[in-house]
Image (cartoon, rainbow, N blue to C red; front, side):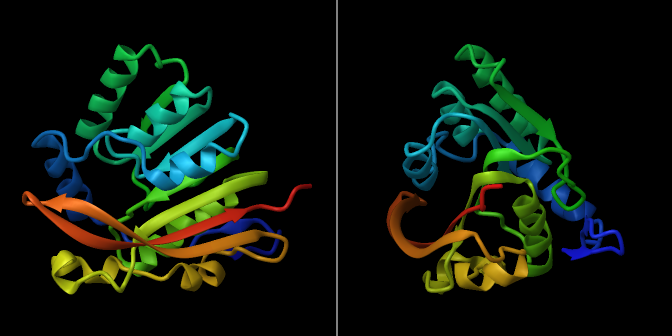
Length: 218
């Protein structure tokens, strides 16, 4: 993200990639892709905060949004895959959360925040470095004064065979700080966090990159 002559933030353009969007649409059209449970870092960080407004970028089937809404947050999830959002909306209706859990179909490559949120989260954005940096720079600009940004992704130290052809999506939290415009006054915590998951019926050891950053208050 750069600034124009007026001082307003502007994003570096990211080429439109219909194949990328079609990939995720088809992935979710085949059925539920994830557990539906809240991601642990969201659970841990939100537990320390008073409920407010939250935004989840690349929300998929909405597990984090629904969890936050159940705890009093007004939460919005953004994703390009309508099949995933349809399941998220249906689950919100089933739990009586439709007024606090909103799901919006938007391609993150073109997304520009028009508001700010107390909590902005992004988990496992499986994109190349240029798109990841552009999306997360926009995410930084969407954090309200005194609000929190939570980013979790796959760490480069994960076993290579777990990445398959998408090894380029791995990153270090420390490398993001300058790339996405986290400047002076932010309180930043980074971590390489081990976890286990089930892959093809087998327990595998993984490593997550974690960035938690709190914006300065006005």
